[in-house]
Length: 279
Image (cartoon, rainbow, N blue to C red):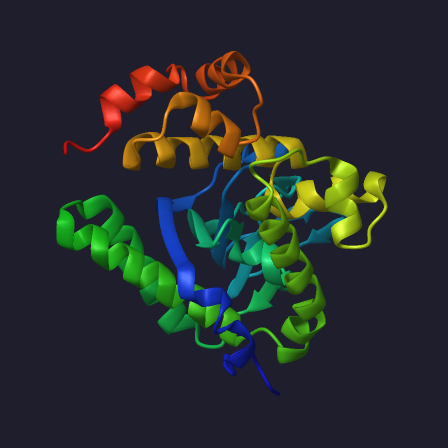
């Protein structure tokens, strides 16, 4: 079976890959383990080594068994619990983000959520190493924990059929168009209708689509990008506050100052004073 081990379609996407581990543990869960309709800004990855339980991820319900990997993608509603009368799970787990540009990788490609590990012993060793590095601390340990997590992610992706990636190619292109559209118009007005039209989607559907893939509503994303651009201009250029306001889509300096302070807790002038590089 062909897998996404064939990386040609990934090459451009993965140029900007960044991986961040939030936590990693091995645990025997209690009979009270469970949560309902949780949504988190990070991915969860479980490696089940024993016991029983269930997870509902989106609209799909899974009953993973020992030797299976389970992915809960970032920004996805999910619930989980033990099974009454059964031994609760023993599992390794980690919370992480793996970013390709502004997107989490698993929001880009939409992989299967529950999958058999090809090599149980190797997978358990990978998770055990990651947990040890995470709890060990130190500079070298932090480097190795990321290296090990990246290896785990690669192992997971090797198990995903290539057709899954091919099916997502059009969607990946569409997300790239949205990002480029916003970046190119930061100095002018950007409406939801304009963004939706750029990718030929109905505005009502576009809002749901955008939030699913970017983890936030469209206008919040635009505001974040304007804030990031303003920060860059304030700290790396001698442009006046009025000129920076113009380049980030604000016709009035006072409006820009209020917006920037709301987003960062600093006025533009104070931010420049605090963070601009010394000449």
